[in-house]
Length: 202
Image 1 (spheres, helix red, strand yellow):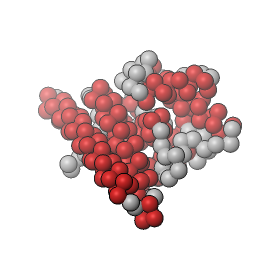
Image 2 (cartoon, rainbow, N blue to C red):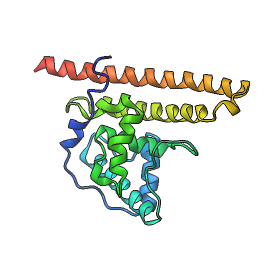
Image 3 (cartoon, one colour):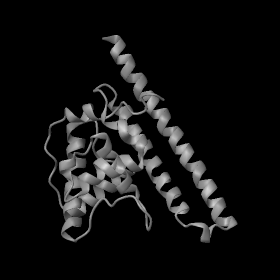
Image 4 (tube, one colour):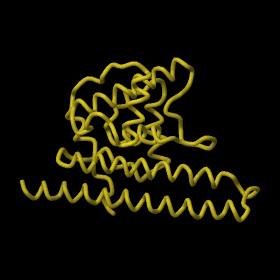
């Protein structure tokens, strides 16, 4: 698809409400809700975006004060969780700004994320006419990021662990990655169709 993710950022950049102030405990709960698709506010509104940005700021500040970088770079070990995947995609799409992150996290988003998942590179291009579809696209993209990270961690086990059971797990996970990629591409096509229809109507 030539314009896979001509989708998200210009919509959200128009919403200028300041990030919501909150405690780290509240931020943690809100991030879990956003990651589960059950946020108490709509990301297509200034209030919803301000709430997400405030949660990222509060939780990131608490993690930084504890001496931990957040969100962490995609790598081996425990891998990414639902919240981390959602936050990285939200930053890639423009719902969260680089200034909402502490320390070097903004560099992580701008460089590591796009290098690791090039499919997300175009998510900062977009228009103001398909926000609901773009929120669905963000959910699909976060699922793709999660499944891809799990697959890469299986591959990092290396030849020493390449028994039949591990190979079978890797094959099944590769199928999950492709299903997630297909869902993401389908949602991206819906966004493009909405943008093109709006342009034709003008």
